[in-house]
Every structure is written in C-alpha cells, then in structure tokens.
Length: 256
Image 1 (spheres, helix red, strand yellow):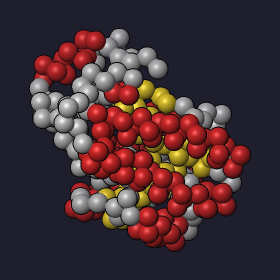
Image 2 (cartoon, one colour; image 1 turned 90 degrees about the horizontal axis):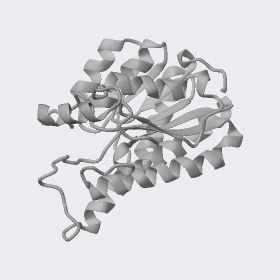
Image 3 (cartoon, helix red, strand yellow; image 1 turned 180 degrees about the vertical axis):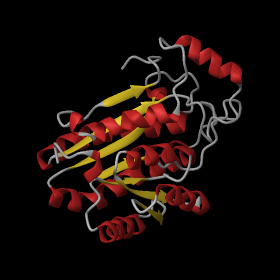
C-alpha cells in the first residue's frame, strides 16, 4: 500500500455527511477515491452528498460507538466496492456545543461529560480501526487518519471534556502507529482550529474570526477545504514514510 494512489483507496469517513466530513469526502472523491459516507442522524445530507458524487460513494448509517454496527458497515463497504476499506478517517463527534459561555468549568465539570466525549471520540475511533484491520492487512496496508484539534496545544477556550478526548486520541494515534507499522498501516492525526465555516463555527462572530486571522502568520482562518487537502496527504503515496504524527493545519497559529 505504500505507493498506492488515492484513486485505489476505499475510504470510510465517519461523520461524513456534513461539515468538515463532507469536505473530506468531496476531496477524496475528486481524486478518484471510493468513499463510504457514514452518518448517525444526517441521512438526507448523506444521500444528497452521495448523489452529488455518484457511483464512487456509498451511504451507510451507523453509530460509531456501536461496535457491531461498525463491523456491519465495514463488511457492507467491502461487498459494495469489491475491495476492503483501506483508509479510515475518524471525524465523527459526539453531540457537543462549542459555547464558550456555556461550557463546563473546573468546579462543575463532570465525569459524565468526559466519559461521553471519550466514548464517542476515542471509543468510536477504536471501533472503526479494529473493524478495518483485517481488510487492511489482507490488502497489504492502509491509512488511519484521526481528526484532532489544536486546542490540545493551545486551549484558548478550555473545553475540558472535548479537548481531553482529542488528546487521548492523539496518544492512541502514536501508540497504534507502533503496533500497525509492521503491517504497512500508517496512523496519523490532522488537527485544526476554528474553521471558516462549518456547522460548529456558524454562530462564531466575525470579530473572533478576524482576531484569529490576525494572529496567524498567513493572516487567514483555515477553511474546511484547506483542511481536507491536508487529509489527502496522508492518503497519498507521498506520506508513505510518515506515521505517528500530528499535522496541525491552522495557518501557523500553533507550532507543533
């Protein structure tokens, strides 16, 4: 798999129906890759996106925290495309409100909140990775790409539960890269900050976007399409010698 072009991959994008996930789906499909658009509740958006892409897209509804449902999804993708899933992009998020005023603080943060994020972000990723492993090994390798956040390095807004779960996913990215490297499977993370614009950032005031842009060397806020370009790097043969890494894509705001 080390020199396989994007066009030969079957890629699962969790939470791929809308927001950043939809941009990643479009980017992979634009380079000839076959894509599984996973969704939990956004069925209409998922089917609309698949109609836009055409025969290279498969829509599948599954909660990534349900290990059995994930296994069924991986098997269905292999049967549909006649080839195993060789790329997993772990993008799905549990329900979360990025509300700086309404977030939990140190004195009222609960384990229930932390557990929900850990189960959704880390548990969901573990389920998809484990389900895809047999097919990747049979294919001679694969790509695991986890979506992270620059809040781990620079918690400008202390979203404790969300950030802790993404930090745990970064640790899992690095440890899994050791286990799976001998199988020709790379495991990497792409981390962003505030993106202009997704569902999560739609309510963000222009003044906040402007302040972030002014703080970056590129003087701009990263777009979802720009972020998706970086994900493509880890699908491509150009990343064949890169694993266990965290690529921060935020215009240079955070130096990793």
